[in-house]
Amino acid sequence: MQIRHAVTLAFLLAPVGVMAQAQGQVAKTPWTTIEPGGETSCATGTPYAFHVKPGEGADAAKLMIFLSGGGACWTGEQCDPSSAIYIPFARPQPNEPRWRSEYMGRLGLSERVDPSDPRDWRGVFDLGNPKNPVAKWTQVYASYCTGDVYLGNRDVTYKTADGREVAMRHRGRANVESVLNWVYENVKKPERIVVAGSSAGAIGAPIYAAEVADHYPDVEITAVSDGAGGYRSPKIAELIQNWGFWDGAPAWTRGVDRESATFEDLGRAAVRHAPRLRVVELDTAYDQAQERFQKAFGTPSRLYPLLLQNRAEQAKGIPGFAGFTSRGKEHTQLLFDRFYTNEEEGVRVVDWFRDVTEGRKVKSVTCGEPESCDKEPK
Image 1 (cartoon, rainbow, N blue to C red):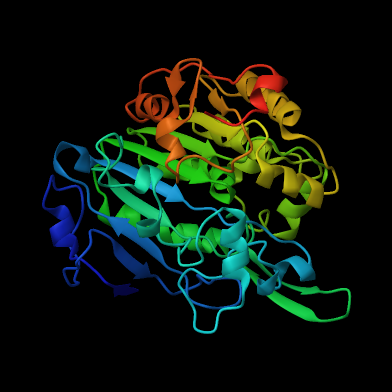
Image 2: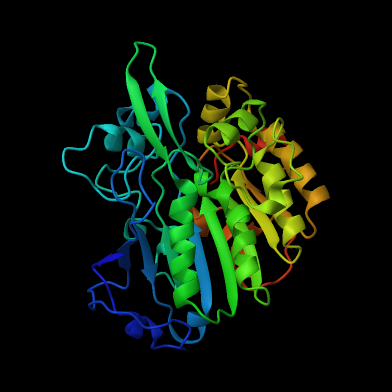
């Protein structure tokens, strides 16, 4: 395991003693970047990396594991890194293709932003914001670079329409497991755990939260999925299989019908396996990124009706489930300043999220009728 820009874990340990010791060097920022090696990999074979930050004071015993987002692919054209439909690297690479400017441009962000680095994000990673509920928590940020919404367990060679081969390492599972192994080795007695994810990470969050629950059976664990709640398409079952999820999938998924599996089916199976696991979701009603992927699935649709159907099924199948639906079309909320400003029914996202992270019961919050939900937040 290679540690770069590292702080010693003894230093991380200082606040409350929830982390074990290891070697390293003190960094200028609170974040440590770790390249775990082994079976981990990004899409094209470049090294995988994740990031960790020590907690402070009384909050240091609270842990947030965050699965970042970054698109998905399942054809040769899409999986070519120059497609800019997914993030192919966990660290900046020399002579990168133009994917970064195109990908970040869709998010309205500068190409100078590294989407795989928590230091470049706002929202829950704005450590200087006094309104941030998790600013002083111990945080672990899983970068994403495999185009498989963290479900992948298979290397695939795709072909483009003109016959080119595109080799793809769908190693999402191996990458997350390296993150979780680090957590298990270094975070011994957490008081509370949130497994959150945005976009692609939102799909993986409840699945891996169930695995975390196995390791910490006496700890309160919540999965927070941000920006992936509206997908409905027969294509999803095919993608889950194509990425290799079923190759060595957790035993608790055996009751899921592989021929018709949805992302929500996997999440509900996770809760059946870990009944103490709490699941909540955040979405915007007409999320433009989710609508683009619905079109790519071959089932184009406005998102809000699909989101309402999924939410109803989640509420029926997951005890204590709640969702927060903001108006507009922006993609995800946890990583942006809108995390602090978006408000529906007199409730701000940040306050709802704070209640979730502190274990308080929350109700679903919605922008209401389709006409009002289509408007941008003020």
